[in-house]
Image (spheres, one colour):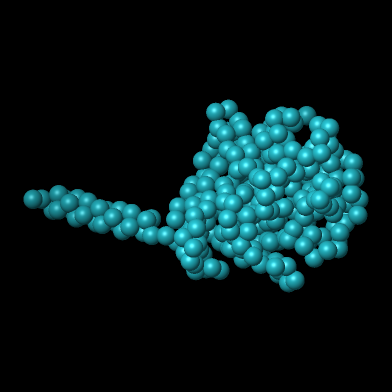
Length: 280
C-alpha cells in the first residue's frame, strides 16, 4: 500500500471514530445546570416553516417524576413579520383562544399575553392599536416587564422608568426573566414548576415565543432563564418576559401547510399576534 493510501485509510478510521463519539454524545440527555434533575432528551433544531418564521421543539424530562414535557418555540424575523397586541373585544367577544385570535385577525401566529381577573378583565398596563385600555403601570412585584411595539419594532422594557407614551402598543406582565442578557432577580415571587408561556427578543432582534406543552408540572423561572440565555441551547434571548401561564398558556400558528397548536384550558382576553409585514 502506498504512503498516500495509508494516510487516506488512517483518516477514514479517525473520521469514523469521531462520528461514533458524536453520535454517542448526541444520545446522552443534557442536564440543566440550574436543575440537574431536569434533562433535555432532544434539543431540537430551528426549522424554517415560512418566510421569516422558524419552529423548534425541545423535549425535556424531570427525573424524579419521569415527567416528559415539550417546549414549543416560534421565532420571527421582524424584517418580515411584525407583532401586534390583539384584544378579543375587537371581535366583540369577552375572550378567545390563540387559534381564534389567528383566524379572526388574519395573523400568522398568536400567543396569550397578560394576566386577567375572574371577570376576564385584563390587568396592569395595556395599550392596543394606539388606545390605552389600562393606562396605569402596575407597581405589583410580578408585573416587572412590558412587551411593547414602537413603529412596528418590538421591545421589552423594565417597569421602572417605563413611559406609556414610549410605545404604540404594549402589555405589562411578568416577571421579567432576562434583561440585557442577565438573569433578573425573582425576590418575593414564588418559584414553582408550572406551565409557562414566554416572549423574548434575541441578539438579532428576532422575537421568540414559547409555551410548555404539558398539563402537569412545568418549568421553574431559573430553568427558563438558563434555557433561553445559555449558548448551548441556541436561543440566546437578551430579553425574556413571562406571560400568563397555567391554563392560559397557549399558542397557535398557521402558515401554508405548517400548523402548530398548544391549546390552553381557558380562553384569554388579550394575545400577541404576528403578521406578515406590509411595506409602506
